[in-house]
Image (cartoon, rainbow, N blue to C red; front, side, top):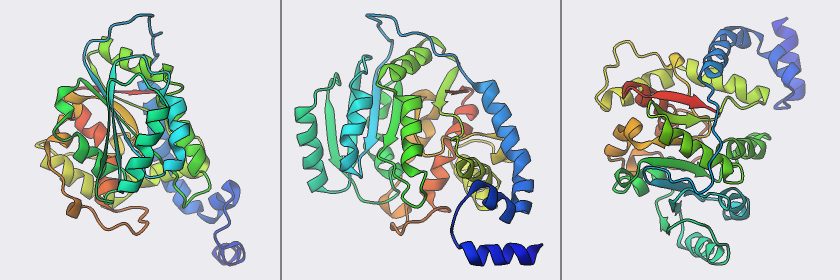
Length: 302
């Protein structure tokens, strides 16, 4: 049977089809299935019911929305998600070149949002969206009660990249109305610290989600980072936590404060070479739920 699988692999190369992929990687799927099922069960238990956002609602606490814009061709798409936000918020945008900064500023000079202010800044092209997010908000985030992070994710290495981004933004922003409801939920449910989307629906992403949690490099790296924040990591097991695949989420600042208190430098992150795993940015993608839980807050899934 292994010989037949080898012949199929040689014949089809990188061709992907869910059934074919599962057959070719039968043993890996068998190992990952319990991990995926545990996550699916846990996420179902963590699913929250979002309240309606009352008209003329006054939300306690300030909100910051941070977006890393690497692909400026997606600005119009993001505007469609932001234009319906009614909760008071400040918008912070990071990018990697002065040319893109001017493009972004020109765009929002012609596309009005309800944001009280829009700050666009340039950062080193390190750590994908993660380093610019943490650096831009490092000295600002504690002026806010809630912080949200999004980015112009394309994931060009998989055909599901655009669908993945669109699904995440629909879950967490919608046309802005969904974002209003999530902030209102956090403001009226003090025990919750973090809101993420559920596991992406495409089979390749679901199995990738399980494989990420079962990866020993990830286990060791996240445990080390978690410990550096001052938490007891002796019994830490990454498989017991969920993560926002794609690093998009909405958080109560107090619940994740340690990640912002730590000062990360551009040199902490590797030069961009299209890495798919095992970098600091991938470690930090996985650390938000452990930190939230370590601070005594619950995770909500939408």
